[in-house]
Image 1 (cartoon, rainbow over the protein chains, first blue to last red):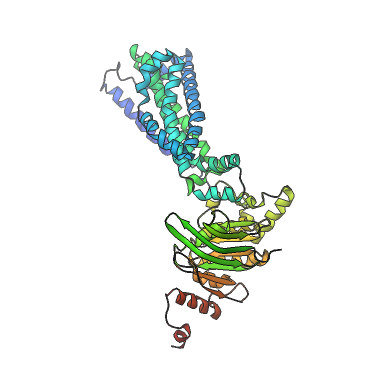
Image 2 (tube, rainbow over the protein chains, first blue to last red):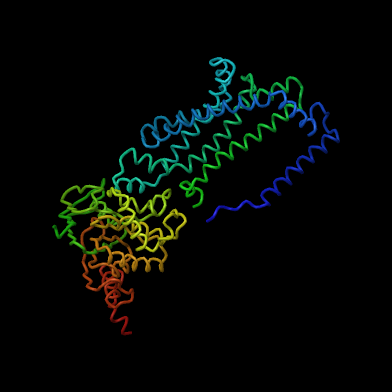
Length: 257
Length: 247
């Protein structure tokens, strides 16, 4: 019943795997399987990383990417969840809209890149738009599914105990869908983070995706890898933060039974 | 005061092409514990839905005087609320927080879950959850309790234990009770009167009065005899039980 305690194995085992991965990387670069210019050594990457931190570019890129992801994702959350709630409760509207939502959900947001640039130019706006397009539709669909999964007996109870409409929404519907929606937030945030990098490679002026592209153009593979490392690490941090939502006592039921 | 808080008069109900009830009449006295048994799908739950006014009859009259609470077949506790919060739903009509607290504490003691007040339903056993469901329906000034196969998802022993538990709770807080069940033993062990319904369109096939104090033992001769009589009425037993005992 108690949450699992953090044991030393939880640190030792992953560290061991990372160490081995690093070792393989070092050996491959020492053996010169690929030339240095296209396969930087861990040391070169570390130096590149320090260089990027010193000249302030790394911080600038991280801030730019995070700002875009947060804005686009927040827009998607604050419009997608209400849309999903409304559609979840209205069968006819659902029948009407579902094919269209499914269409856009299956359309890679990257296909929008040309339009994003033509409509919004270069900078934050096109990227925010792409993040929104990548998160909005999956969130709507997940919310619809979560609403459809609420056992009808909960609404019966709400009726028996004289809940008003607003109270039914805040005290029944929202808590009932919370676990499923949180899971979908984690998945969608992951997708959004994948999309920001891709979008910035083409329509960015700063940001980690732009840094990757810039490093490639300048043939600085060390900087490219240091950006890649940063992208991966931030992705993990974002998921860890959203994971905290699943630890709220009133949503634990959704993950434990 | 009306001494027949629940009254069904010449009620007919059709749901689509299905005729569920035709000219059904039944009245239940104040403080009476009535169990409704019958073949599955005969409309037992629908009868409760009529009594709670969740659905309206096609013809006839349903009278229901008093505050009604229903206990459902499946897990109907809010899983995002603790035991205390779930039970407190039944106290929503009270304004004074200290009075609410007092009622809640007394109820937690009655169902012996004082130490589980802050637990969530998924952290409880099936029997404990069902006790909380009963508590939520019993707390506050309820007059009528409608129970829709409340123990059907529990294992055999827990079910028997819960029957005693319910008898004990009703002893402390008397209510008019309608229990719908497919478990004839349960009906015979708990009810003052057992109403046996026929297949659809359901009407009252027979009624049994049991004047024995609760809690009753499952193997009490009167309980066993009633079970046999009901099974005979439903065409499931043919030999007289006395003959079985004599053999």
